[in-house]
Length: 462
Image (cartoon, rainbow, N blue to C red; front, top):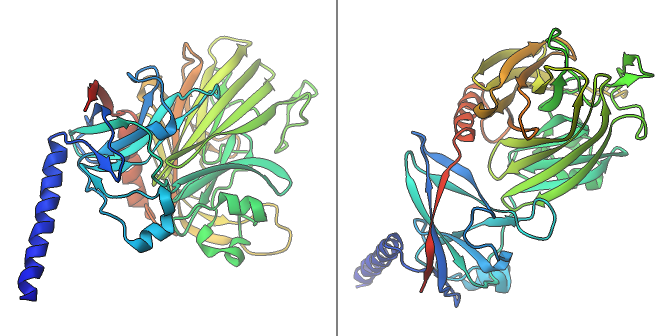
């Protein structure tokens, strides 16, 4: 008899699940606990690529969205194809409290952000990530109405901290992290477990190299040697068309009006290039650091710019948007530049239309260490750079500044361009082989050049 009722119960549960799925696919209205919204808008996102995309970013600008007046707690993004959350147990409720998600019907809510990027108090982008199949047109719903429930675990983090008496910004996903010891050339941080750790690094001022195993082995290690190079990502200018191996960067500027400084930092904050950092967005799905570069006198021009570096949940890449606010070159033919370090340790590099991939063996060792401690040898360190096709990038490999893979980009009308950096290592959780990292970067490059197309339906009232 017990076996009979057990089978009957399983059949009923299956029927309920199927009914919920069919209802959701038919456009049934979402409910969660006592939250029963009566207003929504359908959006259809299209993947034009011939492969499935996972954790794909979706950014909806305020200018394009039919509803302008929004508050973070008056928006619920629902994927009707996902299984609804059942009623939580007493133990689960005791842990999450009154803000925990209750029983859902007709889909499942997904985490999102309503981000104010220009800091004027008004949202600029609605952002979330989703999975979408090859060539799929996927329906999502955005519901309107106050809901006080839904904890958002953070998959990214951004912070600014004093690290060895030096103010630097960090941004990270659970898989990989980046920081700017040098203001416009990126350090890369490899992790052994999926964990957010930049806050801990700054609070305790752990050494990013061999000191870390003593603190927390899961945190990983600095795995990018920058020195005078472009590191895991950096910007500059090609100011001399007849000298293609010469690139100007904000960090190395004329000293006493004559030679280019070979110091790792600029001369001072008054007469040389200066920098300022801001945390623009801090999770849960993406985090953005803004780097403002001012008073850059290259000796052949004067420039100021901002860089917005973004980390994405469950991804091993960061995107960067560069915007010049002052651009006064002394000659014609100047082009934008962005790049990553090359070097003697690399055993593989490949470049194509708008991308370059590098694999190397290196010692993760503190270049300033004078204690005699040995570094940690890393068999595989992967870095990559992708520039969108619309910017018509031209690949160049230069021997100067420690050796670098670079792209020259024609100056745009709005003095702005975008690129993507990616990284991995053999001790990481994902993409920890050369082959898997190459596949990831090539797939990511296609995704970067083919953002999801968004179509909006009309506003529906229940």
